[in-house]
Image (cartoon, rainbow, N blue to C red):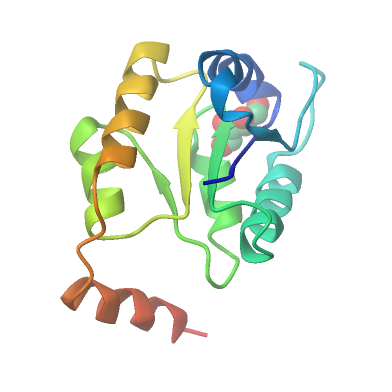
Length: 142
Ligand code: RB5
């Protein structure tokens, strides 16, 4: 599974820490590449295109709170970006929502919590069934 990662300046530190922690996975880093101020929608859009074009199977996005970058990513049809604000949310984001982007807050979440939530998400299976019908309805909205 190819995993891409991106952040704005508010998520840069966490992105770099995650790259180091998951060095064996060779994450595809879409930027940003420094703490210079940037606009989070640019990275959300870049990630959405990367997932939708099949260059990566899963995306990890980070901004200060995880909120702005989630809002921007979810503007793209076919993107299901989930802010993993708790361990339970991490489980449900996969089991029920089959998220293709998981999102974290670099200024609001502790590194150990983020690692734990990524592990939970990865170890959980999508349940399909009635949940697929709901995911299909998300795509019908526009
Ligand atoms: C950038 O200062 C900050 O607004 C951004 O990282 C994020 O928290 C937006 O939701």
